[in-house]
Image 1: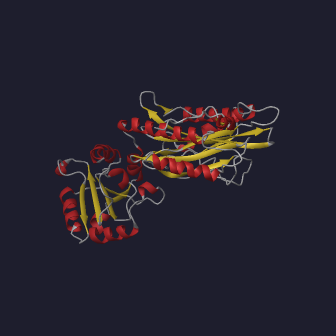
Image 2: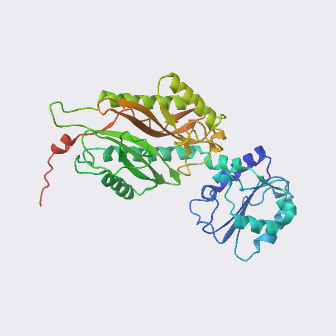
Image 3: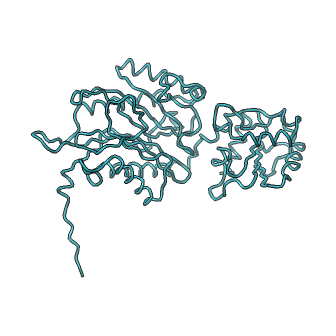
Length: 407
């Protein structure tokens, strides 16, 4: 990634009027943006690693970019001072922001060492520019798109198999059993997770956060929900789907989910439309949130939005659009601008009353979307869930018999 970073950091430093970006970090105490900068074959931070990016202009044109020192003897400091003397930058960006994690990666111990080794002359020229880190980490490149689509295919295939008669036996399988099935299946596919699979039976329970699973035996008539993401090739996904367990007994066995549940899903689908329509690059997360909340209110829909960037991290750098506990406005992260050329997890829920249960349920959905430069709009990588995954125990009872020949 060094080549891309050099090109992009040069553009960013010019936008933010900063000539140098300096990182100082120790092994086991890495700056968060290191994981976005380093090449895939690089080890993690060795000893003390000091990284200095520059604009590749003036007296440093053609020099190594970034300039990297790996040291545990202290020899890095006179060499770093020599580089600063040679170039004489007026502004040096350090990751010292107090609010934005991706712009706050310089540990307090490293800051103290910098102050001691560089002295007042150079430390007086340091500046806090958190958007340098945010924009770099958040920005996706075109070559990542086909790989991320393949990851989405894996996610959907996992959910379709997990939420099926092949995996779930009503009255026997528990939500925890199903969570472990997903973990073991991911291992066989050589992917890992940043967001452990959490499966719940959706009931009217405002005290239970949406991100927690339940410890339930899955029964016919249950509405199931999963929230999980996979990690592969330095990228992360985040997905939430729902499934319905068909009732197979009684005078009226089901072949589809009840209409009332479908109406709840329709509402959450409509909220997805509203969010994608209002996500304009340059608007802040809070501005988009207010527009969306006003629009769904005018359409008679009650719900919450809590979308976030995704990519190098599950909760990636950039503007958030609501939080579960902050449905109207989010300080700091909600005031950041929506950036183009990024990926977002379109995460939300709609409320809908289910007369058969006499409960108001949250229809929780999440799909990942990407920025389309040609249209200036967002598009789902693999579409979205518009129908429930159906678990039909009758299919297991009539599974075809396979006879193996014995030689």
